[in-house]
Image (cartoon, rainbow, N blue to C red; front, side, top):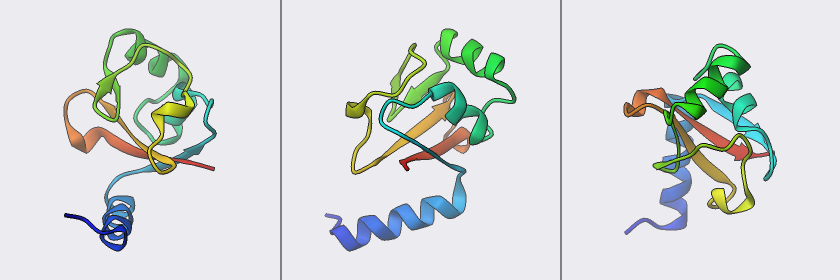
Length: 93
C-alpha cells in the first residue's frame, strides 16, 4: 500500500519520465495535448480526440474541455493511443 509520501515520490519520478502540462479545471484538452508534445498542432489534437485516440486516466474521451471530476489530487494522466510512452501528466495550475 502506498503512503502519501510514497505517492509524492511516484509523482516526482513521473515528472522526470513524461512531459508535464498545466491547466485549470475546465481548461482545454487540445491545448494540453499540444503543450505536452502529444500533438503537433491544435488541429491534430482535435483530430486525435475525434478519432477516439485520447484517454484521461485510462478512459477514452471525445470532449475538448477538462471537467473538475477528471482530476485526482489535482492531477490526471493524459495519453495518446495505447502506449504509455505517449503520456503526459496534467496538473492544475
